[in-house]
Amino acid sequence: MTFAAIKWPNWQQAWITTLICVALFLVIRRLRPSRFTEVALPTLHELAVLTGLYGLWRTAKKLPLTQSEGAMERARSIVDFQEAIWLPTELSLQEFVLRYDWLGWASAAYYAGMHIPGIFAFLIWMFWRHRDQYGRWRNVLALTTAGCLFIRFWRVAPPRFLTDLGYQDLSEVYDMSVYGPVGTGVSGQFVAMPSIHVAWAGVIGFGIIASSTSRWKWLFAAHLPLTVFVVSATGHHWWLDGIVALMLVALAAMIDQVARRLLGIDGEPGPQEAVAAQSSAEIASSNSS
Image (tube, rainbow, N blue to C red):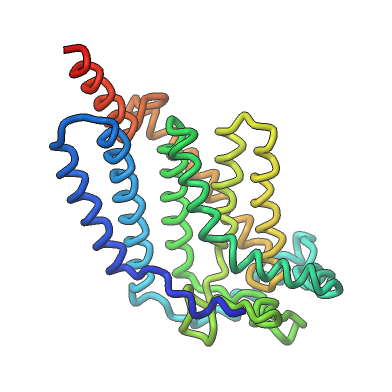
C-alpha cells in the first residue's frame, strides 16, 4: 500500500472552492430565513474560511524559498544539541519499534493515515458539538500552521536522511510513503522543523481536553502522544521538531486569547453563531406574525 499517489486538492482547487462557498453564502443570505438557511449560512461561512486558509497554505508552498542547502548540516546540529541536553535518541525508539513488526507497521500506517483526516474530524466535531469554542481553536490552528510555514523556510533534514547514523524510513520499509522521490509527494522532503503532524495533533489534543466534558476525551486526546511517538519512530522528525511545534500551539493560543480581550469579544459568539442566532430570531418572528 502506497500513499505517494494520493492527490490532495491543489491551491487552484482550494481558491475555486472558496469562491463557490462565498457566492453560495451571498445567494442563500438573500433567501427567506428558515431552518435551511440557519444551517447553510454558518456552514458555508466556515467552509469559505477553511478552504481559503488551505489555499494560502498550498500557495505559500509555491514560493521560491524552498532550497534544501544546509538541511543536512542543520539536522546534524540538532543531533548534537539533543545529545547536549540529554534527550534520548530517536534511533533507540526506532530500533525498539523494528523489533516488533506489527508495531512498525502500525506506526507507519498511523503517520500516513491519521494526519489530515484527524484535523478534519476535529474541526467538524468542534463545529457541530462545541460551536462556542470552534472559532477559538480554528484560529489557533491557522496561527500555528502559519508559524510552521514560516519556520519551514529554514530547511532541516529529517532523521531518515541520516542513514550513516543507522536511521531508516519506516514508511518506505512498510511501503506507505507519502513522499516518494525527492521533489514529489504531498509535502516537502527537507521540512522536518517544526513538525506539522505534531502541531496539528497538539491543536486536536488540547482542543478536545479544553472543550469536552466527556470521560472519553482523554482517549481521543491520546492522538497527540501517539503522533509524537510515530513521527519519531518512523524517522520523519526529531524530538526538537515536536517541541517547537507544541510551543507554536501554545503561542497561537496566547495570541488568540489576547486578541479576544483587546477586541472585547472573549466569550461572544463568532460570525457563524451570530448568523445562526439572527436566522433563529427571524424565523421565530415570522412564525409569530
